[in-house]
Amino acid sequence: MVLNKSEKNLFSPVITNKKSDGVYNQLFSLISSGKLAPGDKMPSERELAAELRISRQSIREALNRAEVMGLIKVRQGEGSFILSSVKGALKPPLTLIIEQEAARIFDFLEIRKLVEGWCAEKAAREATGEELLGMQEILEKMKKVASKDKQWEELDLELHLSFAKATHNVIAVHIMEALKVNFGPFFKFTKSMPSSEKIDVLWQHHYEIFKAIERRDPETAKHKVIEHLNFIEGKLKEDMGTMNK
Image (cartoon, rainbow, N blue to C red):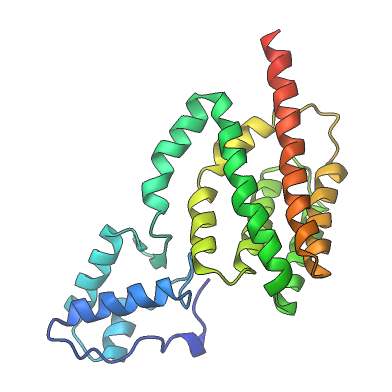
């Protein structure tokens, strides 16, 4: 997400002796408070330097520090983007474990049940009308694609992240962003599910989660997330059992 005009003045004039420290501390505060979320694009070095009235060198030093700390990612020719501060630390080991040890996918599902069940429960209490509309739009797009289509994976992720964002809990959003990068191996395993599993079954699960959130029913929202993941878990176990025979 690119920051709109009203969001571009998030930073304040730097009054500390070391200007780069002041910029870094403001950036850290904006991320930890949720004012800058994972995926947001930062203003350019030039824009920040002009806004804060300090040198581009000080801005560059602050951004370099933030990248080293895992707060942002600088993409050549594109700009700087906000990351989860724990994403870099979680991605390699989790991805490797899930890819190399198939049974670990169930450990991953167990964590998802805890985190996403809580997110759905909280979202049922906190989601705004705009956030509910966003969830509905994602569901409408999902209805039009096949469950084994790459676009389904992207929309599935987007919907689950929208549940987390609707909690308005900054830590929950960052945890889901960190877990998100490990969904690749998960989707690889779910593609092995029997072809008899129709798109409407999986879509219906997501729809029921959304409807529980929409009608402000926290317990059902949580239950529906866990029910969905239990369903996936059961199908994976059936498929693995068939492969081992």
